[in-house]
Structure formats: structure tokens, C-alpha cells
Length: 63
Image 1 (cartoon, helix red, strand yellow):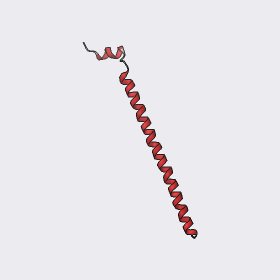
Image 2: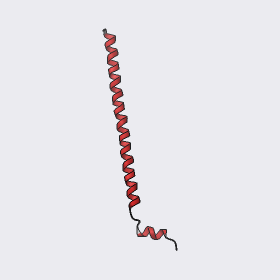
Image 3: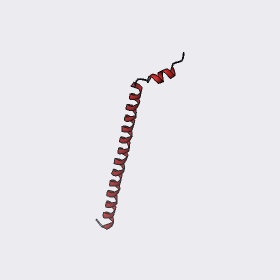
Image 4: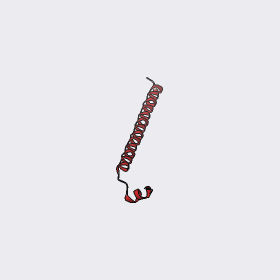
């Protein structure tokens, strides 16, 4: 093995490490997006389950 082979192996190892870091970052981004979607869904369910206020019901009821 000469110096250029060692340099090539070092470059490949560095590229693999960078790729692993990028993959981990992308995974974290998608996990955060999934958490945000779950939180939004929970909030929407809470709003849907909340009783309407009497003032809102009175404003929506027509005689």
C-alpha cells in the first residue's frame, strides 16, 4: 500500500462518516416532523372534544 492508497481509504472513510451524519440528521428531522404531526393531531382532537361555549352556541343559533 502506498501513500495514495492510504489517502483514498481515508477519503472513503471520511465520506462514509459524513454520509452517516447526514443520514442521522435526516432521520432526526423526520422524527421531529412526526412528533409535530402527533402533537397537532392531539391538539385538534382536544379542540374537537371541547364543549362549545354558550356564547358561541348563541351566536350560531338562528331563530
